[in-house]
Image (cartoon, rainbow, N blue to C red; front, side, top):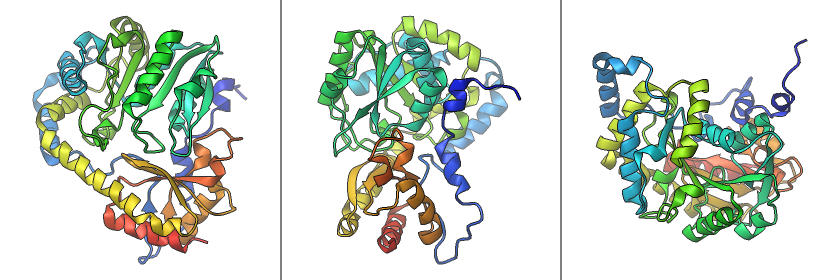
Amino acid sequence: MTSLNPNMAATFAPPVMEARRWLEGVEFSADTPLLNVSQAAPVDPPPAPLRAAMAEMVMEDDGTHLYGPVLGLEALRTEIAETWSAAYGGKISTDQVAITSGCNQAFAASIALLAAPGDEVILPTPWYFNHKMWLDMSGVTAVPLPTDQNLMPSAEDAARLLTSRTRAIALVSPNNPGGVEYPAEVLTEFRDLCRTRGIALIVDETYRDFDSRDGAPHTLFQDDWDDTLIHLYSFSKTYRLTGHRVGALIASPNLLAEAEKFLDTVTICPNQLGQRAALWGMQNLGPWVAEQRTEILNRRDAITSGFPALTERGWHLHGCGAYFAYMRHPFAQASNLLAQRMVRDIGVLCLPGTMFVPPDDPTGPATLRIAFANIDTDGIETLYKRLETLS
């Protein structure tokens, strides 16, 4: 039998795919249809005006079907630079922006730029499992940074984990899986630590358009930021372009020149239709995005306002925001087994905390992640009623 790359063989299977297998052979009644709160991806297509624009692009713009620049369409890169500069009160130029095939590729490219096998990258726990998976595949050690009861990481704690092999600290805000929005001062403390120690700070803001705070969530772009900061973004959630794979990597021009090697080798260029759709969305869908944000915030409010009924039964809400709620359950059964039982007993599919922490982390068996973006407020009420019956 052909031998596998040991790093690949040691990487765990995709968690969402594993959870979907729990549905096999389970029948759901009309009274208790499946509530799928396992994945943080829109299930609806892009809004009709965007789909109409995309149809026209396919028929009228020949460039939609051809190779394009490795680092992405200049018009989209410029739009991002200008929009981000205004939103964050900083200065970002076109040559500091690259377009990637989704935000996961932006992270993969960042690690390929920074770390070699045997190097280390610090990830707060609970972590985004695809970040951990890419580090494992790359032979880069993911160093877990435990967070507090509110899932907040500490730069002071991170400083104690730094070694001569540390190449970056990677943060996600609003957080996946925890939903927590990191305060500006927390991000500044991490930036200052990374700058002092000569390592990169990677900040993944995939869910920035659903942040509950008005105005810029941080000030990281308000100085000569590109000596330290690498910023990641995704268009998948904002414009429902999940299948078109469009993300962004914002960093120094020198780093992006190196990233071009990785991106050219892996995909040659980002999806042309997806890039054009993202640009059209940025230029035309501002009010629609604002409506979507309001709806997500309403669902977040429904999660928090309804939670006291679970608190009475021993549950605890660690974090809530963007698409996610991260909660501790009151049962002796480990979450990886509990989550499978929830499918059969109450028709709820969610992900266990064991998928977001190292195997020896005691918080994993005690926690669950609920991705609530695809259920409305009535669905959240139904979810809570079902959780109340769990024993």
